[in-house]
Length: 206
Image (cartoon, rainbow, N blue to C red; front, side):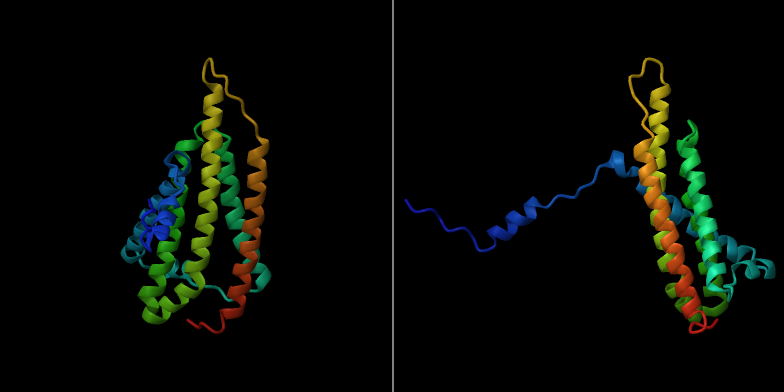
């Protein structure tokens, strides 16, 4: 007896069935928390700027026409300092609950910057923000989110080790390797950000 011919789209259906979303809530929930806290921070930052607009705040948020090296040092110092704070919290037993607050502070910063450009320069400010702020803010937040994920795991690992009767072990080496990679990425991103800002500051004139 001859086998029935499979429908033409059967192979395509089989391929779709093979596709699975590789998502593990226990491993990836820190990334979800980071995104949620970051979005909340953006909303708070935007509302805060609109509520307390002042010349002092505008001077802080106003983009500076500075040299490449100054822009690079400014970014790398800020984000490496934040990176080291996250690493330190990962080494603390109480670090896990505190870690989740950090994305909210980043969201507040970028929320105020976006509000500054939109309120003061409307469409032109939107163009500046889309070109100069959004890409790098998204990149930095992604990097910080992965750092938070590593530190939260390390903090929870430390908590497990200190529990009475625990047989868990703590090995710092894997964390150090991951931190080293992230630190290098932050330096590279700061170089790119400083280069783009230096090149396009004169083009995108506020």
